[in-house]
Image 1 (cartoon, rainbow, N blue to C red):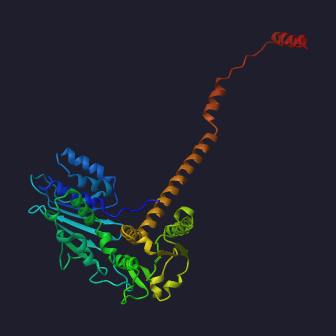
Image 2: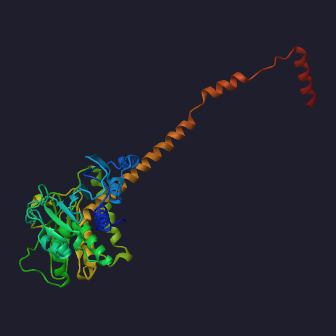
Image 3: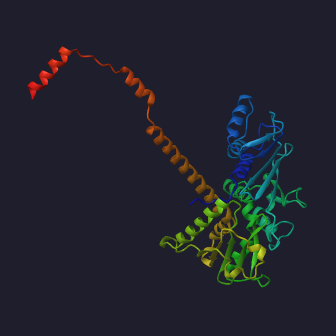
Length: 384
């Protein structure tokens, strides 16, 4: 199975290119809206190259991966770029990044997070502990702007000139910036798991905590001293996706029981809400693909395992959706191949009337005379 990666590849490519080329890119003012038409990307790149426009590597990556729908004003310049890019990842977090020609070391990055449901706790559209997590992770490199840009939950001003001179440390900071989704949405989950690592429970925490992970959807935590139970109500809009997800989750639970995965967190699936969700509101328990529960123990959050556990739990729904779509695409491919083979078999079974008619026309018959017929009959009798 494929695990989703924490840093945004496109955002990391932009940051890396900006740091490597302080003078900026050979482009003018660009506005980009990403869509799901990647076939348009290669054609656009070839057209720009024929016009003599040098596209930066990060922009080529974005074009190939996402496609472009609109470009407003594209021109060749000798200095930096003024860029205005929008893209969405995992279908729930929208990014907006701006770069200025006046100061190429400054980047403005905005995030639009999923709308929290009524049962989830949020402060100004941000999960609890998100501001503190950003300050700890980025330090002087990032400055949080208050209020954020219109339509976004968070806006940060990134000063790339304050990155450390050491290349390894610098790259680590850039990876953290590209992992902003994990840092922001995973902030409250990280707090609970840190308490688990120290085998404590905060006194002001409820027995059942709801955390947002998709628009108007939440998952639940039951924190205890020796374990944390995480429950995901699985919801899908398409009926086919619901059937595939249900089958996938049942197989997921069965796979966990194999001998090689004894160290993994215990996992269970049920079509009805588990006992841990008795105190939850009925409207928060609507799920058409069942409920998945994980039990996290202190050994799962020790040391570097904490970051991995936070990321895997915060993107679990996206992980399931990815494999559901891959399974659906695989079955469609198999069905198309099967139909093609059946059509070929039918084509081979059709009689070739034209070929049969042509062979019949080429046949010739020699009319025998009465004398030839008698001689042939006598020859047959002689052999008998």
